Image (cartoon, rainbow, N blue to C red; front, side, top):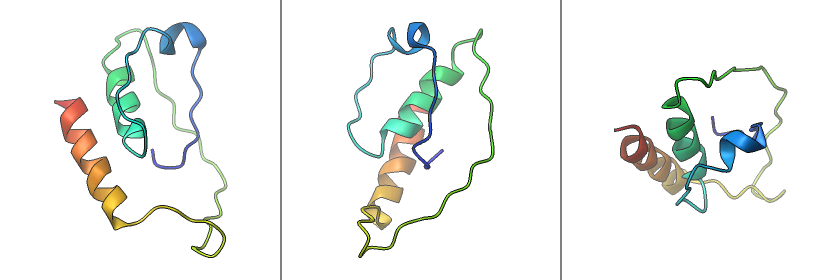
Length: 76
């Protein structure tokens, strides 16, 4: 979920009201999309090479807590 690769048909995503602005986007959109019965979520393998902090990595441990909070908030 936390790789920033998302693909949606525009008619599906236009009707979803989003609140999160940062790393909470992914849990929020995943939870809201999963509630739509006619939508099927596919997981596809990707190649991912993470950046170091010197290369511009912005994710830290606080973002992990925010993601957990958003999972609980939007999934329940």
